[in-house]
Length: 406
Ligand SMILES: Cc1ncc(COP(=O)(O)O)c(C=O)c1O
Image (cartoon, rainbow, N blue to C red; front, top):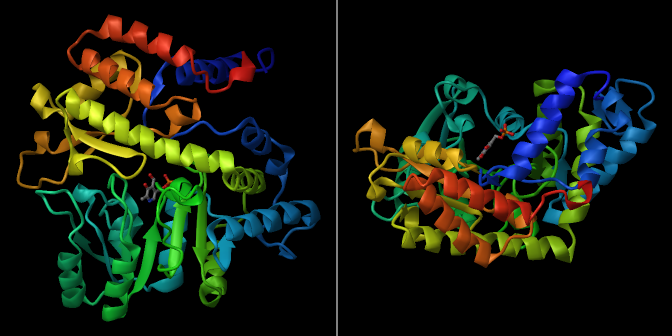
């Protein structure tokens, strides 16, 4: 590779170094296993496989059919679902397919509003969802930051949606799927759970499962679940055919069979006791980090977390979230900004920082390191950038994401 294409080889090596030389606190990222990477980089990526196992539009699918059958069976067993579709190219594609299976253009859908933590696919005007459907947004209580189920019920009664979406890019607490199903049943709506973020916690038994409650569950395999970049859809037998046809041929062409095989590898990894230990440690780490960050003066939304995800306002330290993200990045600490649920405030104050503990937990860090990370973040925010950068490198080099690669 170095000899054939030094330009791209340099990019690969540079990104690899960037990932292991900094603290990766982006809540949606993780380090997949070498086995997942091997499946992703395998010749299965060469194969065209439109359709489903045993019913493909291409010849020569007998081997890749095995990969998809194994992936489907593993996903069903892991999540206790009657049906799994493993072909969605991404989380957004999975949500698109769920809408395609259940809705018609113009239908009313309830979802968390974007300023309160909804995803682009939950009705953003910049996204197909906002263009093709009539979204009504629910939010969180601005005092507590928690979902207000009574207000959601009122909104559902008033708008009579065809579907209700629960799930978020930044809500740090468990979602009450039974309450959402109750609201959906009362108002005659389908319930779609978009668990892109907590899917890995659900697999590891560290978060409640929406599978018994939602008509359709959408997720991503690349976040806490620690698999390849891609989507997953789970549903009951009754909707199985509609979901499959909504993925292919309605919204996608050929499946990416290397990614399907890598998903199968990730599902097997997620079924192990070691993964359950990791999932619970992710949450313990997030709780420890949230507490330590509060101790450093940041305001933690909802006062803590049940999951891998923390959102925080650095305003008490005298800066906005963009400034905070820049100072942290200069110290090698990588995270995102996100909308904070306080609609009355001026635009510049409506952002917070969003961070997650999945990647650092995969690296082997525990609660002690979370306290150290909070200290490093506080130093970086106080503009002690050089010292924080050096201490960050020392910390992360003790926890290499791929120790066997030297
Ligand atoms: C709740 C939610 N839904 C959907 C997605 C979309 O996933 P992808 O980026 O794979 O399209 C995300 C990604 O962050 C998400 O958090």
